[in-house]
Image 1 (cartoon, protein in one colour):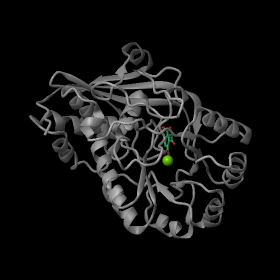
Image 2 (cartoon, rainbow, N blue to C red):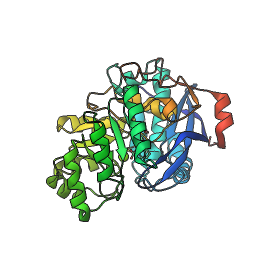
Image 3 (tube, rainbow, N blue to C red):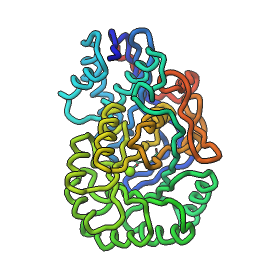
Length: 372
Ligand code: OSB
Ligand code: MG
């Protein structure tokens, strides 16, 4: 077992990066990615983590402020009191804090990056993954009009993205999907509703069965598992859960109830890489397909998502897009670039394999705090 002797220092940053184009979902319009970053030094090695929270509680209850509170006042004090420990032991001690999986993931991620560097291996090796190029996917936000949407999809096809996800919301659904499908009859297409519907909308959701969608992501309430099971029985199109799955127990509940056929595993939403690996293994054993979602992460969070996808359960293309689709300038080197076949290379080198550009960190920084 790989061990950590002790934690030397922990620093927290918030950076505010402008998005190349604003990102509209059924719950918000995002123009910037305001990312909480953690830099943990232990045993003289520095690891980075990114929290997938945003400033507002519209995707889930966690925000940058709640994560900052949980990290400073609970998670780091737990770590600081530990000596000669494994990451698993730290996670075990984090269990006494209920929820706050995003805050926990940020800390876990920094520890995983640090640990892989300490043993001079890439993160995927620490996780037990198999090196390979990673499938790409793009999540296209709600657009002003159908022409803009069709153009964005055409651009994504030209780039060779392996699948295209479009965001829908009530009143912005069937007609749009119909147009997209008739313009692009053979693309791998899916929709994400971000919890905008209820069972009362069954007649709308049933119509989506006509369009040969790979899946419908999170149609119902962000917290619901039971009603999704009732909905899945009425639909041919597979349901994929995102918001509803916060841990392995939620995944088991969903699978046992038949609430979905696919799970979007965002490691940053479920408490980090190790928890994500457990959910992936459970899904693989239960013939539930999984893919790696995104939260508009900077290059730090995106690197974790790439390494995660070397695990065998990630059989579908995820929401991993190239850097230029999100930011003109990211805070890490190297940027993620799609190859001619649409695949993405795992960053090379020890740990996550990307380096924070300190000048950019300084330039985009809106908050800094040394915790220990
Ligand atoms: O529901 O998957 C989602 C972004 C922010 C919050 C929630 C979601 C998303 C995305 C974009 O769909 C994924 C990405 O490209 O990082
Ligand atoms: Mg989603």
